[in-house]
Image (cartoon, rainbow, N blue to C red; front, side, top):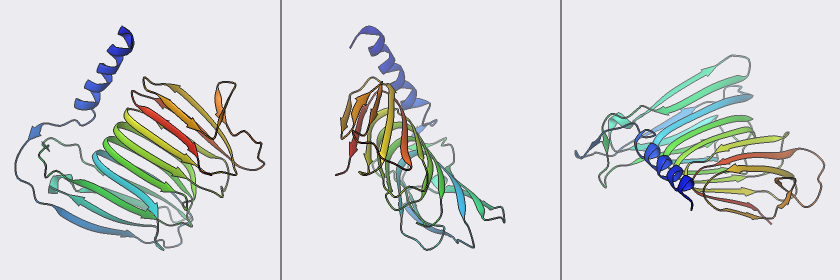
Length: 241
C-alpha cells in the first residue's frame, strides 16, 4: 500500500471511529429494554422508508401482513428509536426511523442496539439506509424493492436481492470501512459499476465488460443496476446459482 493510500486509510478510520458515531464514551451500567412496533397497512400501495442508525445491528426482511412490524432492543432508554410515519391518504406512505444522536455512548460489554424489521411482501418500497457502525443484514428476496440506497460506515453489510422484479431495480451503495456482501439472483440481467475503494473486490458469476461487471448472458425484462463506491474494505459480489 503506497503512502497516499495508507494515509487515506487512516483518515477514513479516524473519521468513522469518531465523527460517524458522534459520541462521548462512558461506562455507566445499562439495562436492556425492548419495544414492539406495528404500522398497519390500511390500504397502503407504496412507501418510502428511511432508516438511520448510528451504531448497532440492523436486520430487514419480509414476513408481515401489515406494512411493518419491528422489534427494537436497546441497552439504554436514550437509544430508543424515533419513529415518524406519515400516510398521504392516496395510497403512499413515508416512514423514518432513526437513532437519536448519542452524547453518551456506553462502550462496555452490555451495550446493545438491535432493530429487527419486517415489511410486507406486497408493498413496493424505496429504501434508504444509513449505518454509521455495526452490522446490516437485508434479505430482500421477497420484498418489492424499487430503489435501494445504502450509506455504510464501519462494519459488515450483507444485502440479498431476489426476483421477480417489478421494474429496473437501482441499487446505490456507498462503502465505508468493513465488508460488503451482495448476493444477486440468477436469471435476471445485472450491471454493476464498482469504483474507488482501498480493499479487494471479489466477483463470482459476473464478467468484466467495458469497465462494468455484467451477466454473461443477455436477459430480457427488468435489470438490477448496481452502483457501488467502495471505501476501505472488502467487496463481495456473487450470483446465486
